[in-house]
Image (cartoon, rainbow, N blue to C red; front, side, top):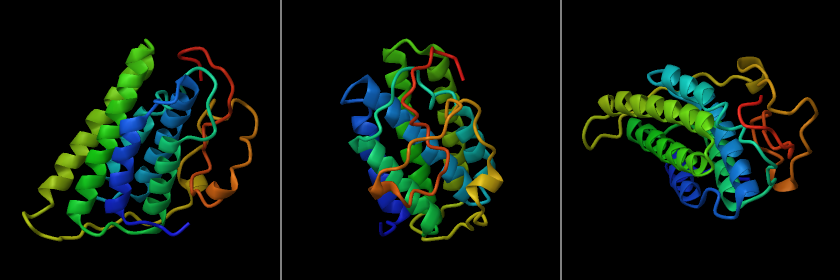
Length: 206
C-alpha cells in the first residue's frame, strides 16, 4: 500500500466518521476498535508540541474501543482508518496546518463514536470517548497556535519508535488469545494492537 499524505488521511478519517456503524452493530464495534488503533498510531507519530495530548486521548479512548459484542473484521470505515494509520506511520506531517487538520478530523471521528455508543446506551464507553475528544481539541488548539495564518510552517514529528516498545499491550484487547491473522490487504498495517477478536464482552469488561 502506498502511503498517502496526512492531508489525505484527514479526509479519509472524516469519510469514515460519516459512515461509522452504518452496516450494523458488529461493523460499528469493529469501526470503533479500528479508531482506537488509529489513535494509538497518532500518539506515536504526533509532533512534539501536541504529543502529550494525543497520547492522553489515545489512552482515554481505550475503553471506547472495546465495545461489547462481536466485531466485524472488515468494513469501509475500518479500512479507511487503517489506511490513515498507515499514512501517519510512513509519512511525516507536511505543515502545522496539516497537523491541525488531522487532529480536527480525529476529533470528528471520536464524536461519531460517542454518538454510536450513546445510541446503544454504552454510557461508560461514551464517557471515555468524550474525554478523548476533549483532549484532541486541546491538541488542535495548541497546533492552531503554531500555525501562522496562510503559512506552511512545519511542526517537528516525534521520533519514530516501535509500537511494541512504546506502548504496552492493552489488557483485554485480545481477549486472552492471539488476534486473527490480518487480511492480505492489511498486512502492512503498523499497529499490532488490533482489537478485532470477535468475542462478545459485557459493557465495561476489559
